Length: 69
Image 1 (cartoon, rainbow, N blue to C red):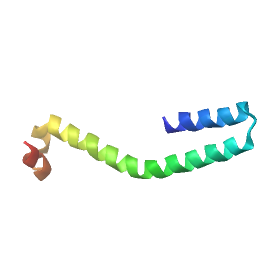
Image 2 (tube, rainbow, N blue to C red):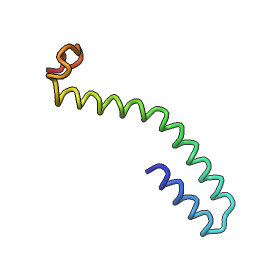
Image 3 (cartoon, helix red, strand yellow):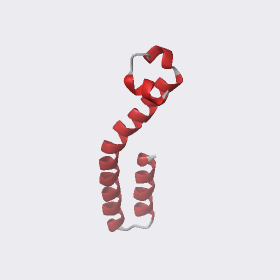
Image 4 (cartoon, rainbow, N blue to C red):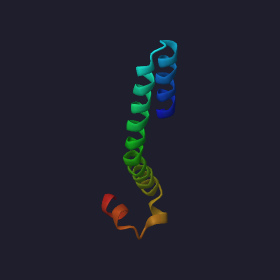
């Protein structure tokens, strides 16, 4: 999603023949790269918790799962 957005911004910059558009594309890429640093671990935590809740018998000793059940 982030790569596609950046490519679209870059394509728009080339289409409009505007050099400032390339700078905006670079800025968007940098902001997305920073966002991914925070989003990745959070997303991993969400999916791992979901997996544990869907299969609680495999994680019977996990205190977080016991608390949610």
